[in-house]
Length: 573
Image (cartoon, rainbow, N blue to C red; front, side):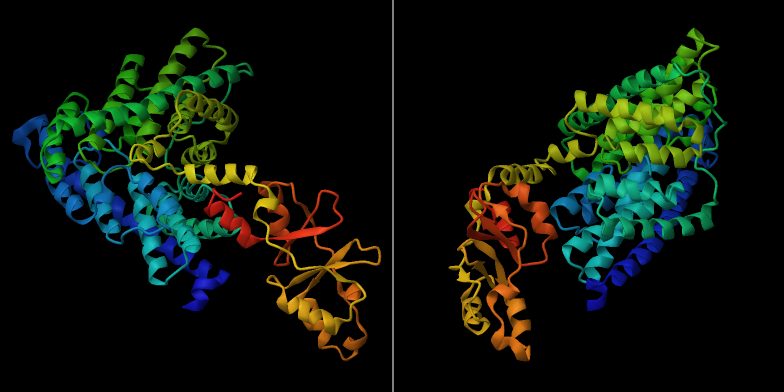
C-alpha cells in the first residue's frame, strides 16, 4: 500500500482503475437515463418526438408531461435530501470546491445518488445535461478509491481529476477533451505528473466507452466550409454575440434559482415534485425542452427551423434549464450551453446568409461554432471549448473560425462578468477559489528576502582544517556554514554532506574548507520572495545564501520552510 501512495507506478495504476470505473459508470448512467426516459415518457428521446402521448398512459394525451417531472421529483427529491445534498444542482462546482478546499474529499455515496437523481431528473423531462453528473460521479469514485488507499492530498486531488476526465471521455467519446476539462476546470493546473495520470484515465475510460457506444463522433453532422476570408470577421462578431448570450444564461440561471428559493417555503425534499408542475407547463408549450435535447440540436444545425423558432428554442432552453436547477433538479449545464449556442448561432447564420448568400457558409456552420462560443462565454474554459467541439463533431474544417469565435466569446465574458457559470455558484456561498492564491501571490510580491531569512553562523576561513570545521557544521541549524577567502570576501558555502563525505576519506586530515566550499546561487537581501522562487525550486541544497547589496557578504539563509511560513502567515515580512 505504501508503494501505491508514493510511487509513480502506484499513481498510474490507480489512474487506470479510476478510468475503467468512470467508463463503466458512464455506461450505467446513460442506460439509467434511457430507461427512465422510456418509463416516464414512453419514448427513447421525447424531445424529438413532438407533441405525442405517452403510450403507457394514453388517456392523459400530451398532458403527461406535467405529471412526469412531478413523479421524478417525488423520487429523487427525498433521495438527494437524505443521502447526498451535494448531488443537487449541476455538480461541477461541488467538485471544484472539493479539490480546492477539501483536499479532494467527496462522500462516496455521491456516486450512486447523483447517478439515480440525475437520470430520474433527465428522464422525467428535466432540461439539463449529463456532463455535470458524470463528472461528479467519476470524481466521487476517484476520491473514494484515493481515500481507501490513504493517498496524500496532492495525489487525491489528481485522482479526483482522473475520475472527471474519465467520465467526460467515456460519455462523449472525447478522450482528448476529458483531460483538458479536468485540468482547466477541476485542477486549474497543467502540471506534468497530474496531466499524465489524467490522460491515462481518459484513455482507459474511452476504450470502455467506445466498446459500448461505438467509435463515431458524438454529433453526426454534414461537412462545412468557409466561403471567403472576410467571413472570419463575421465569426468574430458571432463570438461576441453568443459569448454575451452565454453570460446572460449564467445570470438568468441564478436569478431564477433565487426566485425559487424566495418562493419555496416547504421542505426541500418536496421541492422538486411541486416545482415539477411549473416545468411540466413549460414542456407542454415547448416539448423540445424535454431532457438533454441533442436531436433538436442536430435538427437546428441541419437547417430544419426558421429564425423565430430558433430564438424561441434558445430562450426556452435558458428558462427550462434554469427552472430545472431552481426547483432542486440534478443535472449539468454543459449540454444546455451547447444547445443555446447552436440555436443562437444558427439564427445568426441564417440572417447573415440571407444578407450575403454568396459569401457566407451554411447557417449550420454558425450554429456549430456558436456551440463552442456559448460554452466559452459561460465557463471561460477556452481550451476545453475548442478541443471538445472538435471531438464532438470531428469537423477539422471549422477549427480556425471556431478558435476565433471562442477567443472573442471568452474576452466578451471577461468584460461582462467577473464570474463563470461554475464559480458564481461558489461565490454566492462565500467561497472564492482564487482568493487565497491571490493573497499569497500578492504577499510574495511584497515581502523581501531579508524579512524572512534565517540567521547564518559566523563564516570560517577557507584555510580552516576540515576536522575543525566539522564542529561549526554541527552547530549550524541548517547544516551550512559560509566560507571566506584570503581577502575576507565571501568564497562559498560548506555543507554537512560535503564534510561527511570528505571525512570518510583517509586523506581528510590534509583537506581544508576551501577545497570543499561550493558556490550555490546567491540571493540579494532586497529581492522579493516572488523573484527567488524559481532559483529556490531548482536548488538541490537545503536553501540558498542571502547576500548583502554588494554581493560580498552572506547575511542569512533562505529555506523552503521560511517561504512556506511567509505564505501561511502574510502578516510576517
